[in-house]
Image 1 (cartoon, protein in one colour):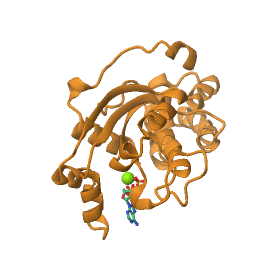
Image 2 (cartoon, protein in one colour):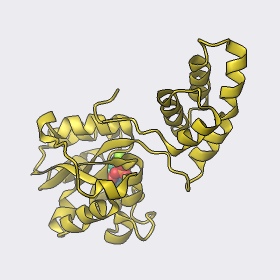
Image 3 (tube, rainbow, N blue to C red):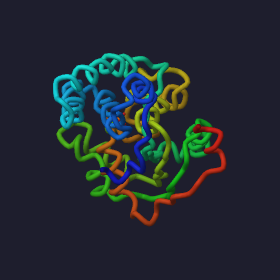
Length: 233
Ligand code: DAT
Ligand code: MG
């Protein structure tokens, strides 16, 4: 299990599924919800089959399969929550720092209800920037991007909350500010793709890798925030 995933919170889809099929364990339901959320219906299907394995195979398989469409439906329905407690890496790039947008950006994550678990101001070397953007090394803008990220202070942060990886990206907006909706950070606060002020991990694996690249384990603070009892039931 990835380090950034502190605990698996059973998703609403799985909770609803529990009402339909209480014989399936919470752990199984959570894994199913995760598989479905990742769009892997094949994985979800095989998981249900496997979890039914110890009982008389066929009769357990059919009832288990019965809630799968509901889980798929819920994963696609934005009004239904299906999120895990997780951590993501967020960075305010040198343009965001120089334009005085630190408090604005931190405030948006804070007001949403996410918990800050690490923060530091750092001027990355170009080599470090290249490591961070390694997946983009074949792109024509890679060199300029690394020059830019290493051109001044960056606010590196880790934020924690249910669904913070995916929803953090929603708060940030599309890569190009021109395509970002008003109300998002990039939609509201910047204009050009190469000066888009903020970085956010794009998935669970990148979140783990980026948190590990930018922070030592002891820099991540685990604590209970007062607001948690009002944010989570
Ligand atoms: P994101 O930051 O939304 O995850 P990305 O990973 O595709 O986007 O690209 C990383 C950064 O590279 C992006 O925030 C800004 C820069 N970038 C992306 N596309 C670009 C382009 N066409 N020209 C210049 N810079 C670009
Ligand atoms: Mg990216």
